[in-house]
Image (cartoon, rainbow, N blue to C red; front, side):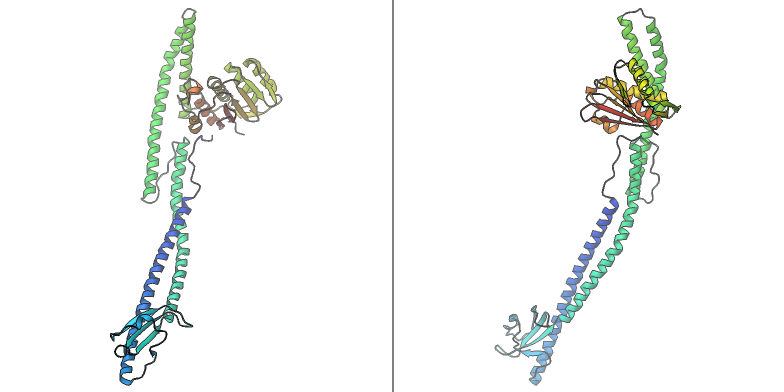
Amino acid sequence: MRPFHRLRPARASLRWKIAALAAVTVCLVVAAVGVLVHVWTAQDVRDRAEAQAFNAVYSAMDVYRRTGTLADGAELDPAALPAALRPPADGDRHTAYDGLVEGNLGPSVWAAQRTGGPGSPVLAVRVNMNPQLHTLHRLDVTMTLASLVALAAAAPLAVYGAGLLARRLRRVSETATRISAGDLDARTGPTKGRDEVADIAATVDLMADSLGQRLRTERRFTADVAHELRTPVGGLLAAADLLPPGETEDLLRARVRDLRGLVEDLLEISRLDAGAEQPVRARVPLGAVVAEAVARTGFDTEVTVGEVSRAGDATTRAGDATTADATDATTVETDPRRLERIVSNLVVNAHRHGAAPVQVTVEGRTVVVRDHGPGFPADLLLHGPRRFHTGATERGAGHGLGLTIALGQARLLGAELRLDNAPDGGAVATLRLPD
């Protein structure tokens, strides 16, 4: 029996969402670490180059003052000296970074000091940073490769870990779906770990226990009330037969019959809820059984079996449908009494809450009952039939047990009962019997 409403799992798997989030997190962490290492190393390279240049110009100045010659790497007033190092006249040593790339020379650090007073030559030493920058480049490549390896290793682990979590959540979701479909015995059971998923699973099981207990209490109460009412209602009907004929007697008898029908419906629902009903199967012609069930309702209903259609009063139509069965000789193995109960309830519901014409079509193992009224309410299509709830005022008054009984009997027969609305208006109930 297909549920009327069920939970729909999200299209995007939580497993892949978590894995993608973990991968993005790893990328961000690796990028942040790589940038920090690069910036720190580049600054360290520059600081070391400045210290080397500073020390080199100190040694070169010492040699120049003692011998008047230039040490290796030292120059006087070099043309490439940055302008920032030309003005100093205080005799102190100064350094400056030169990002200009010339030939094979990369960025450099200059250190300079005047050999004497103002206007004296400037002794300068240039320290090329190209070897250190090459080392920095190799470090960047190494960090990138290490990051890719870390990402490649972290992604499968993230997928595996997310899969474990997703399976636990899916188990809870499947349990909730089964409960919403009416399986009140469904339980998630103990789950691994002590985390939020375990709390959710325990909460779902607790909810199912509480819901099942409440429903069992309500069903027991309904069964007890119906059983207790059966005897006094029977007495009322017997007493009504003793009244003198008249309008009052007819009205009272009709009301007592309605009350007895309600009590019988409640008892039937109670037996279905308790699982006390068992079908007595036999192979019967489907068209003839449906025609007979329609005839017993007493309502003017059009019956179509296979390619033959008859309309008129219910008794004539039952005979025509039986004749049509010779054309459509579909037989099914089912409980004919319960099948008649389903069909009659659907036909009565169509007449009471819908509008004429009401049509019953038998095709193969499928029975379709359609009216031309306002159709089934959206709430009924969403949640399925509910006892003592007709769904909408425009569908008339009633206690709402007919569809509930039909659904319970169909489930007992292993059949599928589907409720829909026709595109051009009207309610459509489709009963598909199992093979």
